Length: 144
Image 1 (cartoon, rainbow, N blue to C red):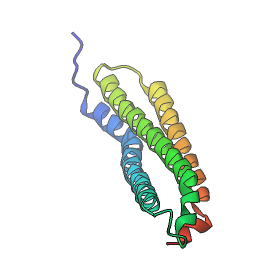
Image 2 (cartoon, one colour):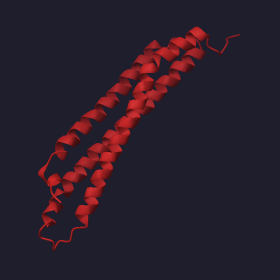
Image 3 (spheres, helix red, strand yellow):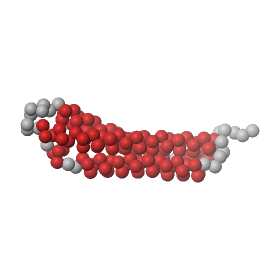
Image 4 (cartoon, one colour):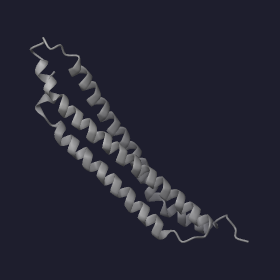
């Protein structure tokens, strides 16, 4: 009968092989927190701009910034989605590694594919953050 309990040596190897994905998972969680913080700042700014009375000639020009804020929020929203998918794939990677060890299955190729996939989604998230940051460097952000 096949034992489901991995040996201490197998468990040690699996823990060693999932150390990098575990660190990636922690980094992605912190990254998602940063992205959400940026979204919250955009929402606050948008609410402030929407509260400006059209008769306020000193600040009414800021309303022209609303489409740009909307685009930034869309990019950040997509970055959060990609980062969340990265976290899910990384979690699946860790699960597959442990289940494979318990079932005495070779898991190297599957784990490698999951890791590459997770990093690809993380890269997409970083690209959207970079795009949002470039849009964010604008004159409107230095007023009011």
